[in-house]
Image (tube, helix red, strand yellow):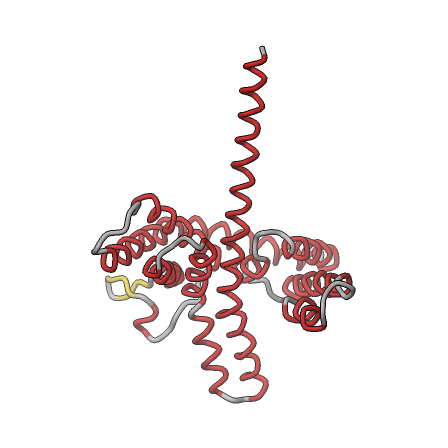
Length: 262
């Protein structure tokens, strides 16, 4: 009887440990994704907006370039957050993120990347996250030890895995994201006040969760009333955190929390 209780306690502890490790992994990788998005997509949007308001084409072009680098930023951000990958694996993870955001087009009987035609798809940050994370874990599973030819094999392997995963996930993930986007936009059109309250509250809660609120907003293309409600929810949350932290933080941190993250 005692042995059964001990085994039961041990099993429960293993489950808790596994869940804790999963949450730690989720927090690290989504944090890395958020950093990658801020360094590329978010800064690109800010610079692009400056270009639009000022009429300076240089800023508009620079903003578009940064937005197009979102996949690379997410890949490198996630790889760096894990702190166990080699430099070649980190750069290859960036390439995996880029592959996941390059939407293939069909032209004259052959597949072509939009980049070849002079345009780049910003892609879906959730797709980039899934492709990069799974590519990294498959790489870690296969490459247990370093070899003299890692410089060639690792990028080839990760690129191949990322391409295969992108093909595999594109249709189902696009369907899910588009369905969610249509639901949010339709519900907001019918009940703007109620849905505005719901969206702002949910986005504010997501902001404090391990997952990235920016990634979700970009993925489901929040715009119009829904986008405004999401912005209000996030800003309200962060301004609240700023006020709560006045006693504990210096002026720089207070500004970073209240303005930088809003």
